[in-house]
Image 1 (cartoon, rainbow, N blue to C red):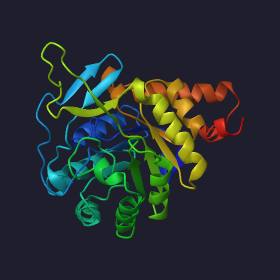
Image 2 (spheres, rainbow, N blue to C red):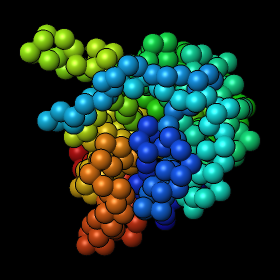
Image 3 (tube, rainbow, N blue to C red):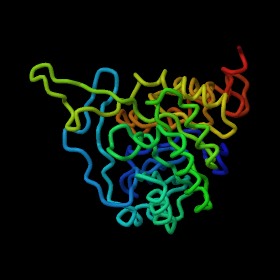
Length: 300
């Protein structure tokens, strides 16, 4: 059991946004499969179809996707969130997005009747025009959005950061100034694939975001830097597929880890990773995961 921004998690693994979080039933299933908490698909103010197919492909080093934030809007998702809350034994975090502070606020207030345990602000999607990283690269805007939501809700607020910036710490500090209870690092890395037989980009949107093992070292460095600079918890995400990856992320400074692409190999990944972490802690004389959070900062 760990405590993260006031939430009780049975283990430090969390379902990442956008993966198996489109319905209440799938969120409950991930909770039942061992996740310590679950995050919904990112939800906006209006229904959105997303980008044309192909919207996701597998590469030798991970996955490349350009979904474009498809979602039914907060009105269309409210019942799914209520189902997840009623059926899940773990915290349910609502991921939300918008084009500005007012839109984020509208979505947060629209989903609040379902009583999510926390909100995760998506200011980091790399392939949605007018949303995500297009606004999440500006510290002033991130601080403004964070403050607007934090001032209007009575549950923890996490801010999911983009790695597609020169200095992710500056964005993390802006989120902290805005009142964020925690930051999530990282979202996918801008990337592209081209079909050499035709010369055309493979994705319908031409470019998208890379996830999977290829980005784990990037995520570890971002977590490491954020942990050193911030006074709020960092939730690590990016390329975690085994317990060793999770331990590495935690040693960099993560208080918990989100798991996304690795779910493609089986939904039992949460329990497997949680068990591996526990075994590692026991074998090395630690009484809990708190003993290794940020350990890499102490050995220099």
